[in-house]
Length: 325
Image (tube, rainbow, N blue to C red; front, side, top):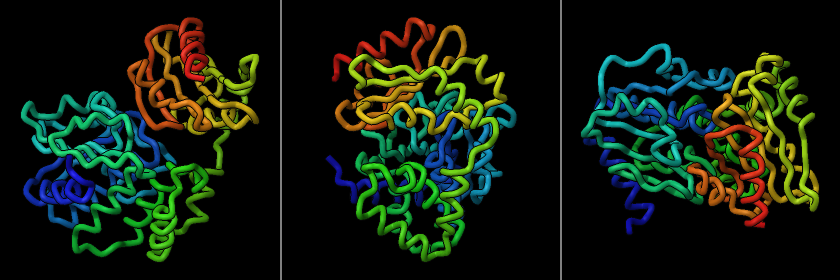
């Protein structure tokens, strides 16, 4: 079994020995995924390497201030015209999370898998995984330290953004002494912490507020008060003019109710599939729960996609949660 330090060295050699990389993150990327993508791009540029950044879909508008974000190709509208042998996957808990970008991976592709999810199965030929890291950008912070590269305000801002969003503004249990030490160092490079917190964690668009109100109107709780959930339909989304990025954080509302152990957001994608987002107080390992349905994540935050309708899936998931409780 490789140590984390050995994995860092192997990842470093992978970057130095190869060129012409494709860098992808998970579908519907969050702050850590976008930040990790651009940080890898910046690191490769510092090493004089050629690279292409891509995601299956668009980058959330609130993340478009990050360096190199304008270079992340939206595969749906601007796909590359060739295959890539050297691929770097960031923040993808399993291979399925890369989505349709895998059609641009060569059959003999050598994948560097950079991730912090405990459910990651090590799908890369090279794996740099640290399951107790607060974010994938924390791992990238360590990897950057393996090279004689000077920080810039832009690169420090990207790393800080990934950590800020994945720790919930330094509120979650993954906010370790190392995380706070990193944040302090990054602020020293000129990161505007208050501005990032305001823009990424506090500010809401009208469509976000509307879909939140709709979701909370569906709030339900189990008779013992341990489980709470909300749901969202395509009709809600259309009525509110909402897009997927507007849903971020909604799952925390049912979880934040006093006494609730598991909060759930059920989002009907269409008539045949539902995306389930799970949050736990720590009593229930929602990553294990998500894995039962083909998903994954962290002990306190996980998700999955299940084929079926809301009427069928909600009772299935609730029964599994009750069993784990």
